[in-house]
Length: 280
Image (cartoon, rainbow, N blue to C red; front, side, top):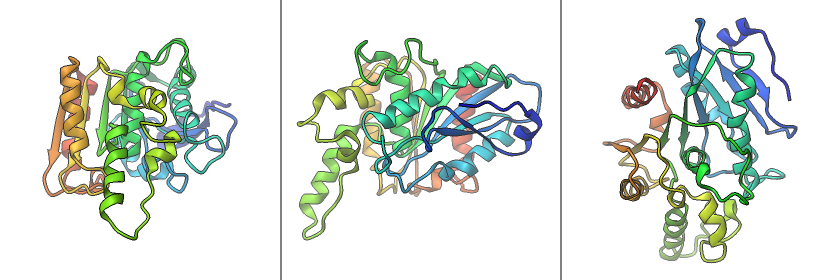
């Protein structure tokens, strides 16, 4: 592991830091100008947890937020297809990468009392899992720290925040689309179906870790064909019943990838919601 100390470089370009020994255990840190300490957004990319998708999916998002005065920690993690990826490695990496901010903050002006997790698609699942990991059982294989870094809030952008429902929706599509084999990325991540591995779903799905006890923002485009908007809508109902503070923003005529494009018509609304959580 390493932490470099050239702060001037951090202000002008991303700084890559490793939180583990594996090739994929790293994050890109961006720190805005100024003395700080700066609020931090842990940014988690999506791509159905598959190894073909990498953290550069969120580079534009991170650049934009850093230009607005927010430090970003764009994390990479072992994914399905990488050695050590899928359950439990994927989740362990996300937890360890987030907790590594405690080490980074010894060198850089980060406000660890104001850390928000933001994830897109499968990254939305991982961000909300981070928010719920305090509710894991003591003997859970997914526990990465006795004192995990606390989050102030969490934001899902078209997130897969209900693993069981997403699994079932994909299987339903498989049944109605004839002669076409449809992969189930949830099964690939967890290692089986909710019926086959209920214990893993109980540890990995945010719906089963409620209440999260922090503010939650769900942003979803109503034209999203990759992750149906009903996942966010039904999660909101469950979170409210559990007593959580949660807000859902449904964006009309918006598809899955527009919400991570800072040049899109939707981006300013997303920044507004994120900023409200940071300033609360």
